[in-house]
Length: 389
Image (tube, rainbow, N blue to C red; front, top):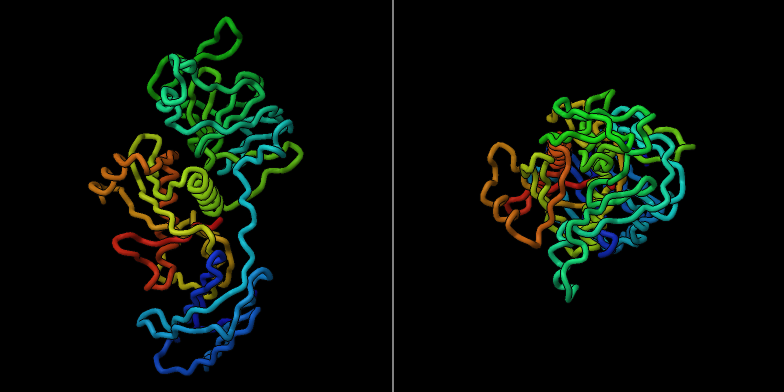
């Protein structure tokens, strides 16, 4: 896909399920400049006196030029028009942890932020999904006798990995000989008669990366550790650590979590809360079948943050699958009433992440929102963003 250094912005949102697309052609730098638009099944071309902007579409997407309609001018945006597309459906979503391929493999756990090895060469015999957080409350509906699971927490054995909504549970007992992630400074350990570490009962159970000091997870017991999916990369041991830009990784993991949860539980509204229990973001999924194709995204008014440098580098032209969401920030006492109402609604699911990652996600959403055409940035009182998958 190529784009010349012209001043015209092209934004195309393709809805795979609806087989339709919204095309927005940005306003030239100076009003009254003529614009020649050419649409073919595989490309878009916009010519102005300043130059030419051209987008080559992905192979799985083809436009239907004869279906163009609904042409209108939107001040601040430019020309809007809709057209039909022929687009293949989304490829099957790859789970955060491919159970069939990685079970019975030796895997290495890395800190995503710095590449530090957290667990080396762990053979995983069982990779199993955990039940929903409220499964205990439903047992009485299933059983006609006393709860057989009472006081029996689900803790993984040595070669197990249990998968929650946004975390992994693993057993660290066999990894004492390896470099281990640090516990928060208030934690103390003492050797036990069983030759493994037991934690003294303290309030703080954070697990910290030794190298970069990022919070990776929390200790659940003397042997069981919860690692958050946004902080850990799990790879077969024969592979090297993959260098993935932080913002790209966070977006991808959150998007996959949202899609999997909405599919499995018919839940489309989420609260994103930190490990401290505070709600940072309210999220509402609009759709998960968008393909966004754009050229010449304007970032002059956006201050560069190191977290977002990889996004800014890709501004000249990109095509990506995305989850379209509505969101509301809840930091600094914003949207307190709405947040309280969502927290008390049993149909709304809570997603727990490290507090620092919640702020990272909010920054990514805000940056994404600011680069959309102005007419697409808000829907009612919510802000709109696309999370790259």
